[in-house]
Image 1 (tube, rainbow, N blue to C red):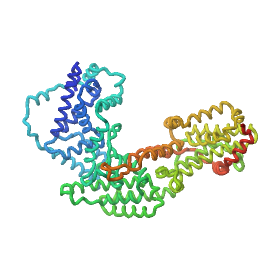
Image 2 (tube, helix red, strand yellow; image 1 turned 180 degrees about the horizontal axis):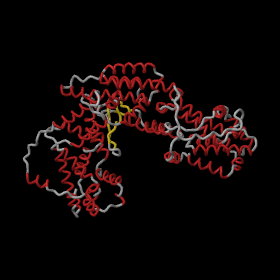
Image 3 (cartoon, rainbow, N blue to C red; image 1 turned 180 degrees about the vertical axis):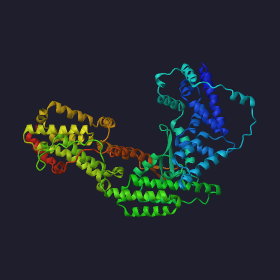
Image 4 (cartoon, helix red, strand yellow; image 1 turned 60 degrees about the vertical axis):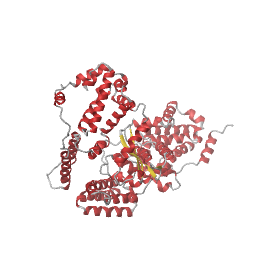
Length: 638
């Protein structure tokens, strides 16, 4: 670092930088990975990284060479590039020792106890640590190149330069500007610099092919999977694949991406079924090595198989925990998974995890039968009751209490929506009652509340009463906004904006200006302008609990469904692969909906008011009757 920054001329610094890159490449060729990581780390240090003019002096080939080396030392996917290379390289080699020590430390964190009690888990820990030690001892072959004592002495006698000194020199060479003040901006400049004059598409395709070969097992076909690199997140992910390959990647012993499992479980019903998914997991559990593998490869297969089997049991555990609805109404699926777990229990090493999953299933059934009681630490507001709970009208309910009870009803309907209902635009199909029953209920209640508000206004014969009712519902609307219940806000806006109400010019002119201004502000908030930008910005800044306006997310899901194909052609066009990139985008929308289902409202339910609301929204005027009454109050003009 000091040698590069300690020169006034940019050309000299660039020349030294170029020599350092060549040195790293030579270390890579000699399998000296310790030096590759050390030197690459030095170049990626901020004091070198920020010297933009110095980096710009490199040729295109030097930039590409550096880019590939930085890719190699990247921590993406648990240092996958390095791990694959170190397994295949010939001796002599020098491994990156820090990573092996890190692996050992992870094992100690994963299994806190070593030999405190007799346990298979403890033995597994000892076995894995032993494997790492054997791996390190395998690199004991020395290099045959003759030693040059003069160079070695010079290297040993290089003085250690304080980091502060290097930083000061770096700042004096290229003063920090506003453009590079933030590390993120510096990273972006570096990314643009490395890819200057090089097509990003070519860059991705070039690495995609190599990674695809490393990613697949020997017996796998590249026709079954498409993998792409995400430069923003600096990692690889699946773009498309056969159902069988998607499940295999899910259960791979080297898989380290928890997001992939979550995305798969949220969306797999769009391209498969619970029965097929379970059968593929069971097939993978009992998978046997290919007869074409040699003895060494078969030995490696059996080592990996136990890890794969544990992952499969873990996946099933997560599946049951997060998506138990897949099992509740399918007795055959329940029986099949029970039989599989019983078989797994017979295998000693999988006994404990399989028993845990069986107990999880029993607990899930119990929790569905029993009503869950939530203890609340904060004080629940006391309900504001009408003078008489036996006989009352809409305006007899305090506007704040109506907002509370509407919020409780809608939150129950909102939480009943399951992820599978959001797939394949089920709520728009002919069999929507089967595909998305809870979305249909939620949408129906949304429409009925709006019509109820309009009906209550049109029931009023006198202008004064209509103004009072409009004012009342705007106050309810405002309270729902304070409760972060955006869905009811939009319901009431829709009710007040229907033509039979909207056209009542004299009525609206009589609404107090202050109240009318509140209504206008809420209309602006929920406007569809710029793809509901007002609502999206508002809900991001609110703390839960919240009830979002689901129409926005349903629109997003329809857009993703119609704008992306369900399948993509394989590399040579011989197969149609599941477009998992589409599934990934859909899963993000579903995750957004799910996060608001986790936090309940703590209002006290009032049975009488709730029954009144449910009865009222079921008895509303139809469109014809609304227009007749509207024209009766204010005649139609030519």
